[in-house]
Length: 184
Image: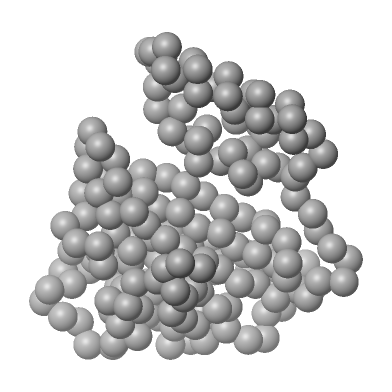
């Protein structure tokens, strides 16, 4: 768990392995050994913070709709960068069962917006205010439409609490949702 703070490349697999800590089976122990072998062969890897990087935030979010084979819950993933450096990331199984891919993606978007709001506040307190909206890249067109459309749709009732939260940040210029290709 400690290494996931500095080794973004193992975050997802450690997240999956943590779900089986209470009763690991041989395949889980084998996977943990593979992670340890990988870490041994990739010493010196980690986060790099270039000194010539800009101090602007950029966020990326994604969700795998119904990706968990046992619970069919989606997994939220996001990454926030300050210039070229990754400063915040998360992979977590969603608490609710998403009935549509747009719902899963929008829940991921709400998670990263919450993180971006906090990081913008922190940077402002440190004397590095963000003067432009933080670009938020998402690959789901429906989730982007929900974030941009101020009219509440009956079909989006499942994300009722997250809609005003995200839209308010769009309207106030804190974030700017943008489309990114799924293959990127």
